[in-house]
Image (tube, rainbow, N blue to C red; front, side, top):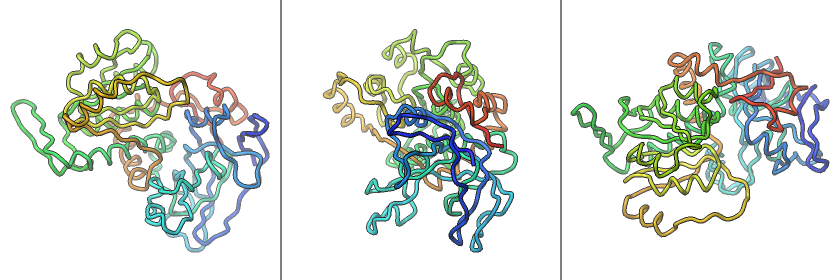
Length: 381
């Protein structure tokens, strides 16, 4: 069957004839891949910055943002049926007996680093015609999201971040003042989040992760700004405006001016992987604020950071910085739920996130960054 693969030793990207998998365990499910999104991680793997083939293979089938259809199930499968649409989760637990996270099926918090990730590290990915996965790692998607389901996996980045954000902010009375009313939600969780633009969020970057993060923040009641180098006529800017985010052009407005314009920043959702920008913005976050890192910068020259100011603010203003990667079952379920909500609230803007669908033979320019747009998709259906 067709598969898009990278050969790290030979630094090559090719469409290969990959063996079709079959069910081997009672809880296995065979999937027909419909679509796979191309993301920054795929492009970095295609640039041979990282990416680890499975043992015994000289290539890695890439792709981890997949939408698939169930075509066959093992005899013990009970969670899905033939014909269901599903999104397969990416990370598989490590085999270290005392890794508490993996033994609790929370491998996104694996302690050992010995997990495998489909299409990234130690296991073939989803950019192929068929795959087999355990039913526990599949998330059902309603048929109504057939054209948008490929966005579930990238949305899980924001969903996991927001789950952690609400857990952290249970530490204090997070007060909202709007139109003379004061609402306190000391013990609020994501599902109980206020809906009245109570807090200010700043998203760094207007790529797919940034825009989906902005949608998730707006959906949870945040007055949301996006700070990005985005030309006014670009589709990113059009989507930002359509969802009600305020786009501040980074090419025209410096960080200090942006911070003065936004006012006290309660949450920063970093989605660009630029460390200089991130640490410039950290200087300006508000009291009790949370800064969320989702990007992984490449190794470049060291940057200058005012560590004294940042540390002083962290202590005296009760600020929190945290990083988040991969996602667990709760975040995947939230992503399916919220994607449905986004589709009702912003149907045109959400549809515009997918810039084009391409045949697998057209993979090279997409993976090498020569194609424009927001989210490009490889279609196998």
